[in-house]
Image (cartoon, rainbow, N blue to C red; front, side):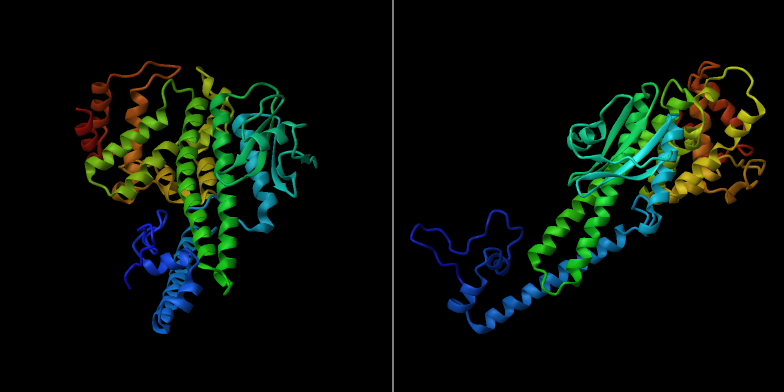
Length: 416
């Protein structure tokens, strides 16, 4: 069917600027001209074809939504935590406890918005305080402004690009280290995005089941889903990087040891020709290989002298704490084995299982070598950094006992 032109020479059925693709049938329905065209300008056969096309488009959208939902549901590794409604209180209390330990503060409380109030979802102390959403409290101001409010009670907003969902309140006697505030802010945004994504998934499921839902409804919910999924991936990486930086701050490294280790591990992966997904997982594991330290008192790492037996035991067991935390963060679950076995030794003399040679996960072998080299070439409170040549000489001398010779050779190629 040729386009008819009006008196001004403009095509009656020319493509709208916002329409993606060159589908005139979709253009007709985008302009809400379907009934008019069907009744006045086109044959019954073409009208039937148009109707079938819309049905096909709706079916296509439903299939796309189902695929997105299956990938990003609560049961999948790309969501933040795997829990259902009956477990929410316990989960949020656990998160609050982790934040309290990391920041070494008096208490932490997590509030979620419900019917224009901030209702307690989990806390480290017995309390039943709730806040109206107004300017009269730090929690209310943080929720409205989507900015952290500082004071005796520090209020950190939980929000995403669609809406605010709650507030994390810190009860602190003294100002909290900026690196730790950045970490809690990244946790807050990550959880808000994940919670909102789950809400949108629920709405999408309703539209899928509703035979009266329109193509427009499905396109709108698809746009929301894809935007949230993109944000979630960005916020996950930001969370990992902030967590690694906070670990380094607590460990009192003068440079970002975890980030240096992760970058070096990534270079080793590329030198060895590993695929992109494996490289990314090893990079994350490198960032988080000392994650357990974030839950230990900072004074332990400030000690230049001999540690007490209790303090030494805490440090020796720190990887177990970190692995337990990682097991509850589904999108990081794949890096857990790399962290768990990074203290194994190539000759079988390491911990925790005494694994030997190729039985040690390759990612663990890469992180172990990258971590050792990075530690030797970094300043610490009790010693100065070692020269690169000297550190590499030590690594080569211990290849085959502590370290995988293949990994050490790749490291040598990168350093020279």
